Length: 348
Image (cartoon, rainbow, N blue to C red):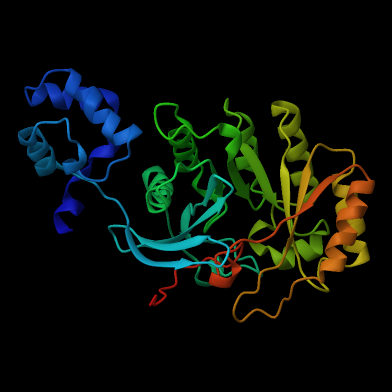
């Protein structure tokens, strides 16, 4: 473990660096392509798995490089088949990741930061603040870990775990491109969704990307005062400016953004709140995901009654706004939206 702190992760090498390395080691040029396939298409996590590479060359690579793959500290399995992992990186930083299987599909919810600085009132992730941002490889490693544990191909990834993705913009985009790479995990761009608290500069930069990645916005209230209380970290990105930025995004990309709306009893499920949400959405291209709030330990907030959630869904649909009620996955193991934090759990 200590040696891997000092050596570089071989997966961080570019194609050019890999070609130069192979040449330096006196190996034929085709070895670079072989090694590249093991690293980026087959996602191996040890040199021993590279079965068509001579052992002498594997030994040389192992002397100079390492695989800084995360260690699984804990795993919990939900009644619905979802699995939550506590993964630890080389420096001791840990994050939670969730795998959600569904009818021959496998979705992964990844973290982009260890902890979060946004401080949303209903979310357990931000209670202890932000530790650090993750690298692109650390984000991708979460997806690889889940794929290997399920022994299945991952079909979609949501960047909705711990952290604010647009506070780690460059690494998140790099991770999206690695996941989307046809020679790598080959996950379609539209099946890669980034969820932001509404960081406007990030939305503007996201709109400029050539790929058709999907954008989700944690809205949770269309009344400024309520949203400030629920999401203090997003206070400076006011609703009128956010609305304007999202409309510019839609015009630029032609893609439909999703609004995440956690329904909280007595806070954002009142009639004025419903009216404000309808006004915010009506006449625009968008999709609203209504999510019954997931209980987090120590929170006084409770989920709205299902009848209220269904009423809001019908009212939105009457105004031509697409709206679905999202069934939270894994809430019996604290793996649902707003429940992720770096907590060590003893698994029997």
